[in-house]
Image 1 (cartoon, helix red, strand yellow):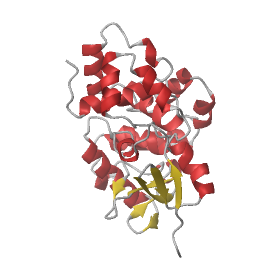
Image 2 (tube, one colour):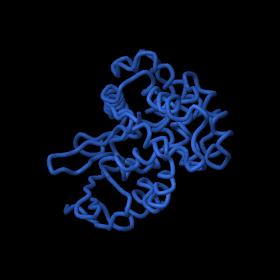
Image 3 (cartoon, rainbow, N blue to C red):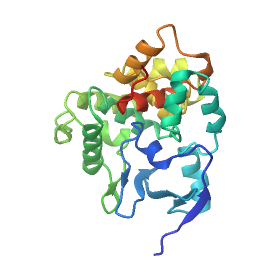
Image 4 (spheres, helix red, strand yellow):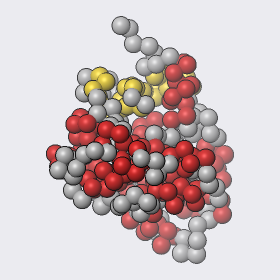
Length: 271
């Protein structure tokens, strides 16, 4: 069957590869044709940005229903990044890595991914997630697997997850699956409530502290005021913002954080 192809002009501030590979998602990879390939909502998407256009292996209707919100395509990042640039440090990060957008991922996959990310590096995170999907997900295309849901994982023991080589994180994944599938952690409630409620809900899960909760709220629930703080961001905040974050990011803390994180993770220095 012939593959569908839909093209659309990209917004002024948009970089596909930078967005998909800046540490907020872990299942995208480039194929031999230069397309970024990954699974969203149980479907394999192959995307390429070329000559100001985004080329997608789907129909316009599917782009609008799935990829448009996933890529945060309609948000005015030009105005946001211009506002961020009132701060001297953010201006440098935005100029260097212009085009980063915050992905709106599935909450369960996001939660599991950032549980796995604890005390870990990105290649190892990607490897564990790949093994999780291959072992417990369903093959949806050659070499691509669905992300296993909470119902699939809730009855497993840590020994069942041993082949993933996730270490201490295995028991946290299982606890998360049990609490999400059983309704103790309510995703619908988190979605509809202020961010403080989401923080309270997510830390009910063993092994989920402030950083994992903030990542889940930002990347999985679109709570843009969430501000994940890992070792890189702690350094930036400690060195550049000892008296608090700049007012220009108010309400969009998570977007600013992604620029600062990617800047420092790539070895850049503000001093």
